[in-house]
Length: 194
Image 1 (tube, rainbow, N blue to C red):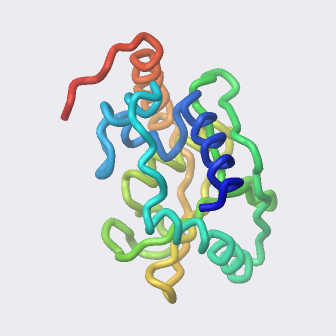
Image 2: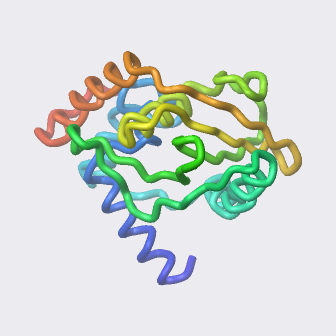
C-alpha cells in the first residue's frame, strides 16, 4: 500500500469511528458473522488496532468499478458516486459511506463481490444475506430513500442483481438498537463478550 493510500485509509477509518455505518449495523445489533458487538465497540473507541485490508477487501475494492459499470450496462441506469460520508438528519451517529446513488429511481446502489452463493436468493428478489440487508436498510434510513439496488459478482463471471425496499419498522428498530450501542461507545460501557 502506498503512503498516500495508507493516509487516505487512515483518514477514512478515523471518520468511520465517529459513527455507526452500514457495514457496522449487523455487528452493532449482534447479527454479524464476522464481528462481535464488543469488537465493534473497541474499534469505535480506538482501542482495537486496524488489522488492515484483507485480500477479500482489496479485491472487492479493485472490482467495485467493474461491478458498478456492468450494473449500469445491464440496467441502463446511472450510478452517481457519493464522495463523502453522509449523516442521518436526526440521528447524527448514523453515517453512510455509500457505493452510490441511482438518481433515475431514487435508490441506493450497493456493489458486492462474493466467493459463493450462501445466503443469496433468486436474482431480482430482496433475498440477500442478513448483514447486507441491514447495511442497505441502514443506508436507506440515513439517506431517506425508498429502495436499494444490490449488484453482486460471484467469482469472476456471475453477476446478479437484487432489489431491497425500505422497511420503516425494521429501520426504526435498527436505529434504536444502534443508538443504544452508540451510547455505550460514548459512555465507555462495553457490551458483554460473545
